[in-house]
Length: 515
Image (cartoon, rainbow, N blue to C red; front, top):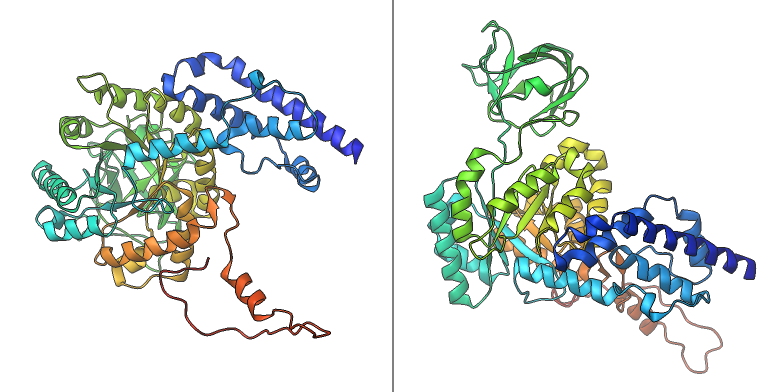
């Protein structure tokens, strides 16, 4: 064991030196962020350096030795390494130890979440965000009921409606917040580039383009030359076709149909349908298009988004940046959102493209130019872009990296979607909702059963949240364990333990939960 401990000491010392070297090498990056973000920037670099190695064997050895395996060290990497070294006998002077320990990191994330999303009534569940539909502009009673039911943030999507409707929504939210005494922040989601289908050739009059598997058709700019009898799909965002390369995938209707580029001249691309998740493939107008393999040159911030900024500065508490891809995009919006007193309206970076996932550390470091900002895991377009099979993996990685940067995260898209539409949740949706407890805020889409869904979500998050904080599992008492031991107490004088394997059918009170 002494040889093993010596080896562990050497490995941890090497890792400590490595993460410190990375921070020193990138010192200008840390110095360039807002003064309140420097501790977080350093820890983010430490975490990225740590995750460049395969640590699985080392983690097993640390666990076997009864030491921290670094598995929950995202928010305080260097201090966790130092703590393990100290347990192995290393003498690290207090003046040289990292000040970013677990309590400090936890407090940073908590404070930033409260700044973004407001105070929470229940400290054991994430903040709750609700997406508004058009009717809420004229339904004050419903808005008030949502605030009373636990809505902490009201989301207004600028991809729909108009300024007059948004103003009435804002009025109802502010009025309901005053009447109930409950805080409710206003989150304004910029529309971003609208990438939707337009039928330009055959099928345009009927509103659908019929296709067959392996059939060729065209993706073209509206002003391109083509035969009106050809099967041609256009895009609401001009300039896309010139960015396409042979072999790039093009996904239609939330990934329902997949095509690949075979030829392109910059104005017209010949594409082939290689997958159709439907017996009768039909592409209709106003359906989403995704280009997961293409480096799109169109800027994320559109002219329409810029036109909305005065309204956002006057009415919103935080602003969502849709389809952000590059740090330069974030810098542009930060400058436009700067208020007269020099402060910047807090931004939420919506991670919904493959490019944004790849650039996540750089996006976070640019976000750190402001004292506080957030990240949304926008799982709708993200799943289409990266592939549904990878969504679970990628959403976890985003959570880990954001925790390392002490950035609050919003878990969004299709949370309890079936219950919101039909009144009954699926089994898998309940499990998915429980995982949302890893985030600081959970977003609900608009639906018929919002009040019921809010109640269900609060219940699920309360039960799940008691078992873990972010990635770190905590041991609160388990009712299953208590019930078994209480039922099977040793009877005094018995020579053998009597085991009772019966299961009680008595239902526990709804709000008590599994402790």
